[in-house]
Amino acid sequence: MKKIIFLTLLMSMANAFAEDAKNEWQNTTISDETIAKIQEAKYQYKKCASDEMLKPDYQKLDSRRGTEAITKQCEPFLAKMREVYLAQKVPEVVADRHLKQLRIQVTRSVLQSMMFSEAARASGEQK
View 1 (cartoon, helix red, strand yellow):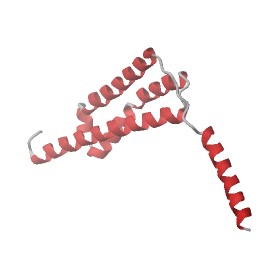
View 2 (view 1 turned 30 degrees about the horizontal axis):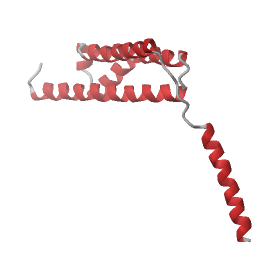
View 3 (view 1 turned 90 degrees about the vertical axis):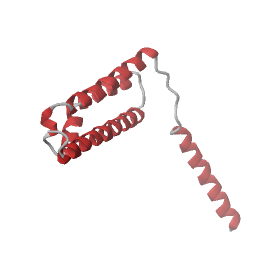
View 4 (view 1 turned 120 degrees about the vertical axis):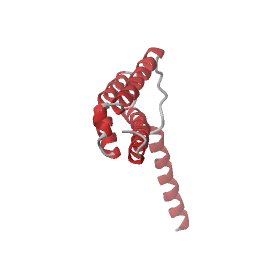
């Protein structure tokens, strides 16, 4: 009986390893031109967030609402970057993961700056 259970377990493990091979990372090559396009879109996205932070309309808002408004305003730059990735046949999962990481980094930076600005206004340093 133990041998049958062991063999069944062994056979199921072989199937599990076969499934892992299908999900394995397949290396992609991205040309220097594509990398330059992605870097340009990334720069434009960060520049958009920086420029939007300077507008006085956002300074009047709560830091979290201002951050949300700024990131929504700059979303089209991420869409351009995603199009570049998909044109180069980068898997959607990888492209979306990178865009999510970039969005989180920029959102944290904007929120930190907005909170600092809000605290400075509250303390009376800025008007």
